[in-house]
Structure formats: C-alpha cells, structure tokens
Length: 117
Image (cartoon, rainbow, N blue to C red; front, side, top):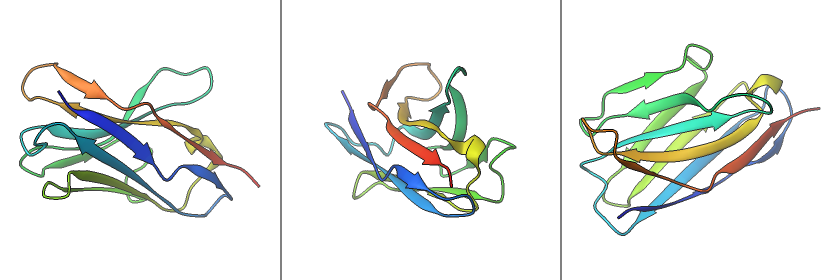
C-alpha cells in the first residue's frame, strides 16, 4: 500500500513557474513508476510526465521542454518542475504510483494548478 500526497499547487500568472511535490508513504517507491497526470475542466485525465523505476522519463508533447519530472527514492518524493506555464495547463494534478508492468497502482488526492492573469 502506498499513500500519495501532492502539494505545491496554486495560482500563477502565464509564463510563471511552479513546483509540485508528491510525498509517498507506506512502502518503498523505488519499484514503482511514478507519474503526474492532470484533469482540466471538462477534460479526461491525461498523462503529463512519467519516470520509471529505472529513471526513464517521458512527457506529453504539450509539456516537453517546459516540465521536468524527478524522483528521490530515499526521500520518497517525486517532483514536477513546471516552467513557462500557460492557461491551458490549468488542471487538477494527480500523482500516481504504478507497479510496472501491471496496471496496479495508487493515486493521490490531487492539487489544483490555475494559470491566469
């Protein structure tokens, strides 16, 4: 069992930056692929960024070059650094732990990111 708690969301102006953090407890996260997903108003949840247990990363095309995902297994944290934020990045951002190669995993409760002037 893994419990995930996201933090760092908030209101930011277009072009600004935020760092989201996901704190895990209950289990060693080193065996999990960790990801950030988001769900905007009226939209389906989508993958934003993912980092495998072997630290391979992949990103949604819409955030490549602007967002960076990182993990610290010793501290049990996963961060998402978001730069050059756009209004279309507005969404609830969720942390996910996935036990590769299965679909089994855990979700956090989400943190709101609003990009607006």
